[in-house]
Image: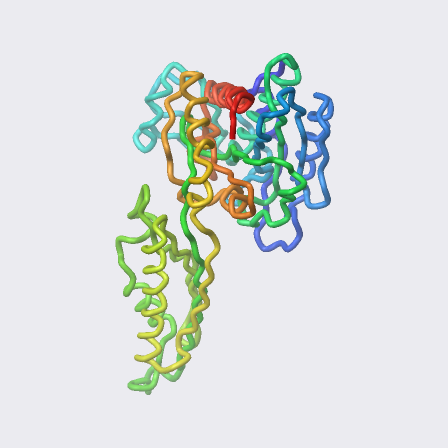
Length: 405
């Protein structure tokens, strides 16, 4: 049986970085390369597997417990475009404490990564400093594939039917509306995506995007008194009317934020883009109401039409869809305990495919992959975590073989 580490090292060699601004799905051809490889591997293990025209991989592991619920496991094919995922050169480090020299002038510092102390005496997979590692989400893929292989090599083990899916373009926010929930055929599923060992998530941000266009009045600055309206300065004024401590850099846990993602402009015109989030629905609505009130105030001050706001909710907290099926959380926690891992409920300060899938009729919390520092050159993953999470998935299938839902 191939171990999870070897699978992971093979998968990260494939360039699957997604690309924003592309209409087609997948946004990059490398995702098909990995998808086709996975289909071949799944078929070699005896599964019915396929990839469709939009790079969604689907596969079925037949069960031997016909009364067991059908559960699914999902990871995504792409890596973040935040930093290059091409020519990844992973390296194994026998960590004995202190800083880790990655290469190319970069150092993974213990001072800013104190959690490294947990891994003294363990083997870590790191980058060479020139790319990200791709553990988000190729760790998840490798862990799922190892679980599948275990059951194909141990057909005597009790297990229900298990559905597998790998999706494209998760990192660029392509909501998986093309995911075939009825065709997938699972009653429940888990995404296996991000976070260090033991983390389990069933809550995520309510989220909205706000696009703001500001129209100014340009005139010669020497004759501007009482006439000029600088769109750039109105943009600054708008930002200063929002709570200064409610930004990503000042919040954690269940605290929401206003994230000024983009700002550009001059005297005549300015543009701002915000992401507005909160776990609590009432507080989330208050944040959106505040943004509308600020824009309305500025229109009253500088003239109607000066500030144009377009705001759209993009995600809802999947907690409301998981709570009626809380066995998903309880069984995942039990699976972790059964293999010696302490579970920790961890709110998702972002999104996963499971967020949208939960509202498409497939309740779908998230299980960790063992990753740290995703989306950057300081990304790393402990080798033992890869194997531990594969064992968690194996144990979770065991639990559902006897589950009465």
